Length: 357
Image (cartoon, rainbow, N blue to C red; front, side, top):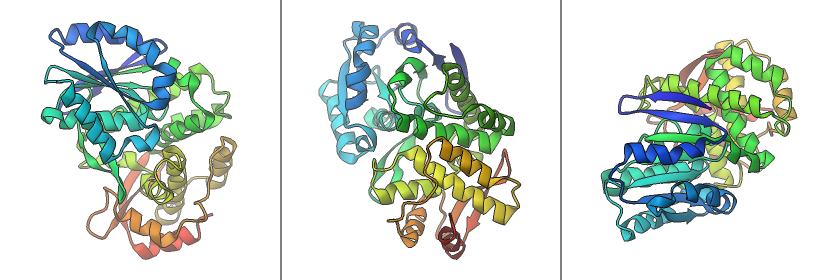
């Protein structure tokens, strides 16, 4: 078990990581909420079926209410957001109530936005169940999707705590592991060349990754995220570097239809594209061929889906949160561990998309 302290301008909180981390939830609630009135668990259909029975006994004394959303990105719609708020109102949650996000990144985003909106903000706790959520559960960015853009409607609302129990990861499919591990690789690329070297040397298959390797990977990713979040909670500066690969990645997700292409796999293609731009525009010294070979062996697609229009992807990228006016801003690398934000023209991006292999 490891405890990582996240420090932000609005709140400091702990992320408890390891096997059995969920067993710490009851003690935390008792110590921090002596007047706790209600607990609303927001989960999804998949997680409810697999893991809800192991969580409920730990918080049974508080008679929790459970709202079960659709799985994946289908949880992040206006309709589901409205339904979750309706459940909170019907069950008379108040400012001494707590929302518990029990699931992957989509459930965490939904739950956090419900918590941020209900009565103008009540506490929530993250209990992630995916590798992807090692990133999304930390930092307080919560949101739902709009057909015109991913995560464009939301808030900054930090959790009170994160309990990241690695036992939940045992039920993940290889595709879900792959989606989450893309964020681990991202953290290494933008911050820690030594960690990137460790990944390249030690991670040869995501189907046989050991518990020890997984623990090191996610704890290192959380610590790296804290380096950015602690200095820039509201993404007015360096926190934007955490979006490396996401500008094109989100565009691919949107064009493919939310849920039809996993977040991490789309971001991996976005990172490859950003690395290509970094080599050509910034002279990044990086062996893109070896990197591509490595991630393909890990099972990642490295090509933009052929059905997608380059022009449509440019239009989608213009709706990205980092875009200012008509300028698309990309996170690129000057060298490993040294990201930079650059404004790039439509013409350049289109040209590079057409030559992207």
